[in-house]
Image 1: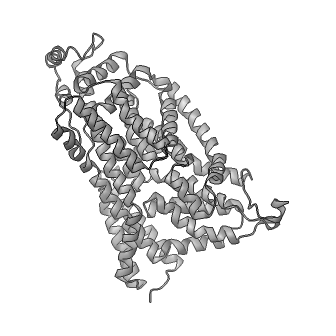
Image 2 (image 1 turned 90 degrees about the horizontal axis):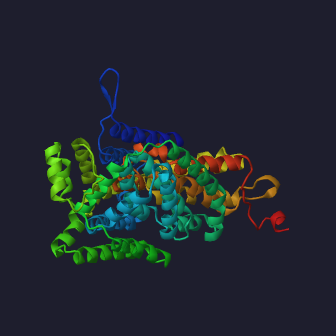
Image 3 (image 1 turned 180 degrees about the horizontal axis):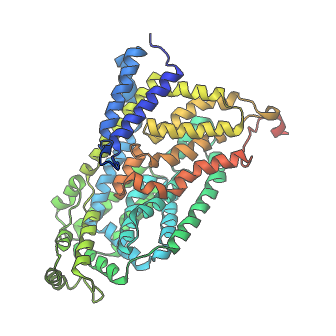
Length: 514
């Protein structure tokens, strides 16, 4: 018979697990020259944290290995769809790069974008695409990759661009009725989908407006590159890829299927199919076209450009590819090689193999989450929290904090909604407040998304953080400060509740019904 963990033990296990992960991931050089942390890939410390939690559960709580195994398998099963999408997105990115889809979007984006409005435009574009698709992952791996390329072309910092792309993608994902989390949160809390969406507007719209103002203000101070650099990037992409308006067909296929409310997996497969046909029509062999689905794309000419460090080598390339480069391409050989290296790094990606590390991290992280849930560590902490909650703002703060902690310790966005939602649903149904009122279920579902959905991408070992950083090529901790939408949303939600703004009560209360 397994024992229920005590509060102190639960907190101890969470803190030790957090310390193991933190010490394993970080690598800070101290003034003395020594290092704090090992700087390891997150999979390794997460594995040891999983072993530690399993040992406590097995030897102290007497949880059987069979139950621990079921907990791990059950947690991993939750993310099977996400893993399939990850693998397909790897294929999508590789095929889109080879067929010229990504290069075409970057090429024409450089034609119309200016540094002053780029951050704001990135935010708005990501919002629109995520609203249409209902998926922040699809948005990040399609227009997000293109916007990162345009940012590099304009000479703007990639982490800032990534922050605004993520902010827009997660706003759209949160509000769109097509989103899985937008459907999951009301299902867990017992609210209705469109009531849930309307309730989220109260906290999400103000946060988006604040983020938009920040994007505009940061754009006014942005220092972009000159036209010669942009012309050079466009010339290099013309030399490597076939730039054509036909390349917009695969993205349009995905957007159209999303607006038709077709699931993400068939939509991504259709986008892959469109790009494969485009590659074959443009002269690629069947072997080359299909190989990128597994191995990703490796540029044919860009690496050569990156090695042209002398004026003679640069001039030879300009002569060889005279049809690609224009008279505006007047840069030094140093800039020429730097841009070549940047584009090589940008376009050397995609394929199933590029997602194997991410899939590995998901499996290990969810194994930890499954053990935490089976052993009951989080349930004990949440129960203790509820005994000290005396106000509505305290209740909402508890949900927000619990969802964030679930993202940190369970490492999965879905679990950050399911576990706290399942725990707090009973409290929302039973707790009576002033004048005999009870909070409406949408207050729970809204709070779950305000924190669970929005903060998942800010945790380096969370499935969302791992996925987005791998797709955009920017480390989680680098883009985190600029994801204003994501970390401001929980703060705005709590502030509005504390001020008594946007609190929704149950409609079946006698006073409300009258």
